[in-house]
Length: 419
Image (cartoon, rainbow, N blue to C red; front, side, top):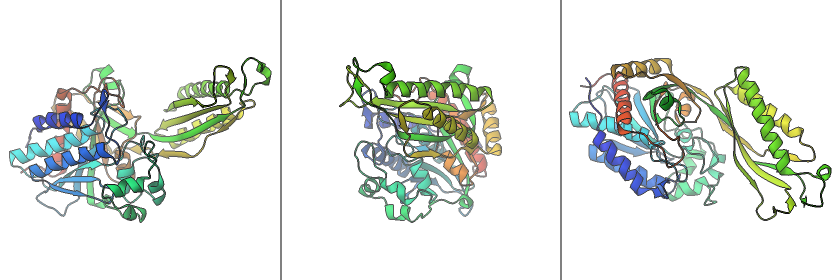
């Protein structure tokens, strides 16, 4: 049986999410803050209106469940996150939660029931722009967050994750003890619909894409090049320890290494996302003595991440008179998507008359946590113009409807059919 998702509900929810969290030209749904909480409250209220079961866990992840005919079977899950980067777009993350709820709303309206429970999960704190920890909500759900993460401080408030969580009614003590809400043996599968955050589908003219794997990351969030300040006119070139020049050389060498590694068959990205000199000391008439920066390396291969890291350190050692301190390292694990789920999504797209090419995800997603916990996992990308993590995200409702239809078909199939 095929039941159409509720697209009117989806449009209404997207508009409310935009209005409730408008910030300049985009939206801000701050992690464990007012913006993310408003979004969770909105989706929970809509789920209750539909008659779904609504609950949260110690990390305040939200679970919206349509009971199945056989409730003891492992649950079919879908969902994504509701937080955003500061001044981001309206669809990153939220599209996956809205899609899942729209599918269930269509089933409720049609009076049908799946063979087993189907749950939409609104995951907390996926965006590590707020706290320097990857996949906070999904890791917490599997009991894998670690007590040290609770001491991480939000970049804008300076308060710890534990403090923010407590303020909203969460249970940081349970997270510190590693208590798990989810286990692999109780989950049949997890499927995440998400906007593509790059230009591939749009460039190819494809509406949907099936993710092959999710890149892991190696990150230095607080790296620094330390040289020596000097007078811009009185310090000859050979006597300078210019941190800007040394940093520029590091960037150039790293770009060359990236190109060489790609030529050797490696798949990776390398980004210097923040670069700044000290505004209190740097000046037009000074040689810069310090540069602060961050580095984000991503790949689906552990070996590739390690090799790029080795080359980065080698380039830093060759900087004359300037010392590089990369600071603490953080990151996330790569993940491989389930072949059977990928095939099911491909077949469901074909029934909609759509090709859905395979492509990797360079961005990280909570699906990686599920996959690495032993859950059969998959991702469905919907094309999106203008990239992501910015206010110009542009997903059409027609494309979204196609993605919801494919998602709904596979969820129903995994749940044992609708009756």
